[in-house]
Image (tube, rainbow, N blue to C red):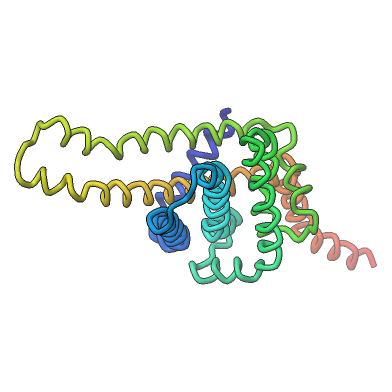
Length: 268
């Protein structure tokens, strides 16, 4: 739990320190969520669906679209975070270029994840609790590694590690708390505390305010979650898999190798 809290804290400080870059990198997420919301609203207002179709849509299709969008659209933020952690900062354009260079791996993963989400939700969301933690690192593997078995590698990273559940719980609670603030203006207006002409005018357009706040909140949580997962992925590779120790050994080897060559020349 402490490790999950530490990674979340580092992620939020990273967002704070590079706010403008993450705002630009988060635009695809904003556009995707807004487009998805507009598409769902347009479909429901244009066509009249039967009750079984509506149940199928809200229980399976809509969650699949939402989860897929929130998983893959913030990935440029993950690229930016990863290279910041490696002390090799990249520009916003370079982060998008990196994502486009991995299109083949990401597209194959996206198709497999859509299929997985569909049958998870088809089985009343129960497999989601069991299998989702094993796949949450799959986009990071597709972006930053070249192994062909992406999902197997993702399961290997998070095996016997419950910190991902703690991290997910933290973000779920954060979204609930912030989401509960969105209807607060409506409750104030309905309480008739401020009865005037402007309050009646505000009631007519309050839905637009709530919609915009909801979209922005979802985007913020998605980007923050993606950045936290990148910190978590970096932590797993650096410490549990020993990449940090390996890099230190390589540095020491490069440092002492010239001295060994000089000593060899003198002895010769």
